[in-house]
Length: 161
Image (cartoon, rainbow, N blue to C red; front, side, top):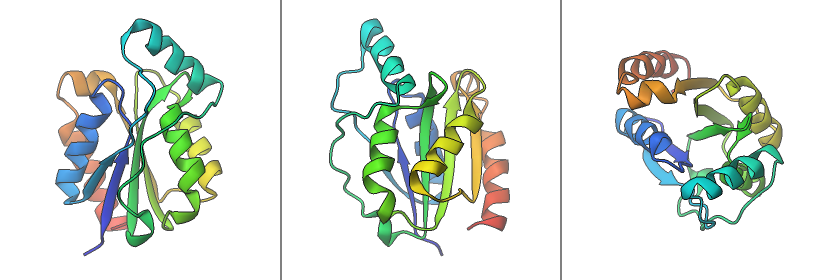
């Protein structure tokens, strides 16, 4: 059995909901990447988008799990202004050397910029993911994501895990 870690950043709770679901399905350890900057409210939402678009980093809380001890690390980020959230960028930039070879990238999006986000993530860590999974924010809001994600995970399990 592979040792799996799900790392995620979530500002609104949508990505957290999905990451927790994935963690339960895969029987994985789960850890949230916590941005220490207040990102609540309309003004901070706009600032979070600006930080993402400008490819800025932010200060995050220390990560508890040592990713080098895992066989597979699944990383989940919302797509913000055509790219990953600043907190995920910070995590990847500061921890890329400790990541295992087997990575899976997930994203939650309201638009259609997942591929760009995945490419940027791969460029930062210097590794291509074994697979990627995209879920729309609307599917999560309607609670209609479970079957789609389970099917993708079943394929992943056969190919990756």
